[in-house]
Amino acid sequence: MADKMTTEPSVSATEMALNAGREKLTILQIITPRRYSGAERAMTYLSEALVARGHRVVVACKYNELMLQELHKRGVEAHVLPIRGKLNLAAPLVIAKFARRIGADVIHTHLSTASLWGSLGAKIAAVPCVGHVHWLNHKYWYVFADRWAACSHGVRNHLIAQGIPGERIEVVYNGLDQRLFPWPPDGSAVREKLGLRPDQPVIGTVAHLSAHKGHVYLLQAMARLMGRLDDICCLLIGEGKDEARLRTMVSRLGLDRHVRFLGYRHDGVELIKALDVAVLPSLREGLGIVLIEAGLLGKPAVASDIDGINEVIVDGETGVLVPPADADALAVAIETLLEDADWARQLGRQARARMEQIFTLDAMADRAEAVYYEVIGEYQQRTCRSAI
Image (cartoon, rainbow, N blue to C red; front, side, top):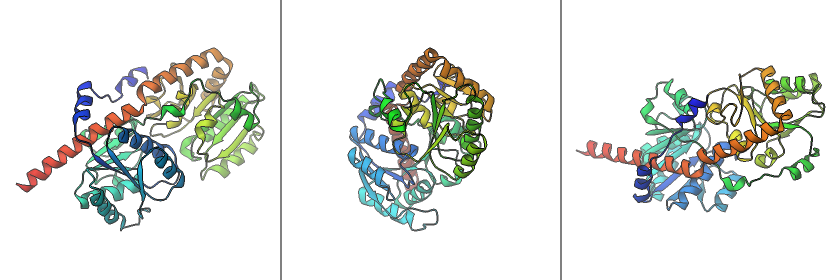
């Protein structure tokens, strides 16, 4: 997979200079979140980075207390609008009116509901729109966008397979706020709070409890590991409709002493500090932000070798990739990292270096700016042609 890693989107020095010299924009970000999770945090960090570059960024969202607090703390203007729900036919009119009121130069939508209504609102307001795809979504939520942003090449390929022209899709990797990832990380306080010994082997995953996240295979791997690592602990951080089935499976496999369900936690980054190995056994994934977080904390990862994930993890260099739905391979990789502390630390250091190079706020803001200026320029050209 190492060859594949050379395909990250990059911004030339010339393009960066052009962006720096262009007029500042009014950017309307639209999102309707349930949680303050991966896509919401990526939008928040991007907005802060764009504000720092002199742009006016306005976020329109449904009420989400934690996200609103984070936006306020970071100096990003936010407004709660009645735009939630996929049956909310008034939402495009609300968005169009708001976009005109703030003088938006471009609308940037995130996730399916916001992208459906935001792109329609952009058409009404005569403002260009960038639809950001953070998951392996169906194209119909984004068909009215002028340009598409994909969180990975895997997502871009998924959209192309649905008939979206590749030239309309730009890869914009999520960048994380590295101030949240001090080095070296200290997980002792988190372990103490969770009642875990300093030397106890601890693995875990931060993921919605859904079938496609592959928790079943992680539990099967745990059943293989507990005979050889009697005190191993696995933290499952997240919630979802699969929780009851997974709890039943834990009991059936005799894992009650080894597996902890911690539910949805907005402090997931803190909990990752307690891990020796981060695990993401997904069957489908857009990118795998938890792997970026783990890497920035210097944690080696074991994850499925699938599109999206293999753009974050370089097998044998920053973590270990295993075939999806393969509990035996998962168990072997986890045990190897737990028993070879030197190699695990080496992978963790290399993971942090990779994340600091590729998944940065500056890189994300550079790509977003370039897309904004391009789509605004194209929109203006089309408008001029239609007026002739």
